Image: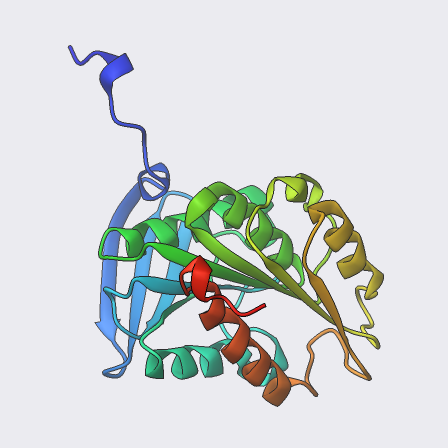
Length: 232
C-alpha cells in the first residue's frame, strides 16, 4: 500500500475529477476547451500562447458567461493581451453563483495553464466574479500577481485580508445593482489597493469599454514585471 503521508497533494485540476476533455482551435489565436465533470461542464476560451508564462484569468458574474462586462470586455482583453504575448483564459463556471465551485474552476484553469508553462496570474472578476477572483488569488498564493474587480460585490470577500497581491477595484457610480460602496468595503477588507469610480456608468460598465481596455492594458502587464521594474 502507498503511505498516505508520502502521497503528493492533489492539485486543483485533480479535485474536479474530470471525466473527459475536448478542445478545438477556434482561430489561430483562440482555443475552445471543454472539461466534463460529474458536477457540470467547465468551459474555457484560451487566448494567446498556450505556454505563456503570464496568464490572465477572466471570471464572469453570478450568471456565468464568457464575455464579461462593457460589451464583451473579456474578448477584447484576450485579443489585446495576445498581441503582448500574455495568455488569457475566459472561464465559464460549472455552477454559476456557487462561490466554492467557481473558485475551484478558476484555480483548476490556473493549474491547467501551469502544467504547460504559466507561473504568474492576474485574476479579473465582474460582480459576483470579484469575490471569485479574490478567493482564487488567495488560493494561488505567490503565483497571484494581481487582482482586478469590476463592480464587485462584497459578499464572499470576507477572507480578503489574506490577499497579498496588488488589487485594482473599478466601479460605476450609477450601478443599479451594487453600489460603489461595495468596492470601498472590499478595499477596506483587503487593507490595500486602489478604488476607481467611473462616472455615470452602470453595473455592466457599458460606457467604459475603451477606458477599461486602456487601463487594464497598462495595469495588468505591469503586475507581470519583476518587482524591481514596477513603476510606482
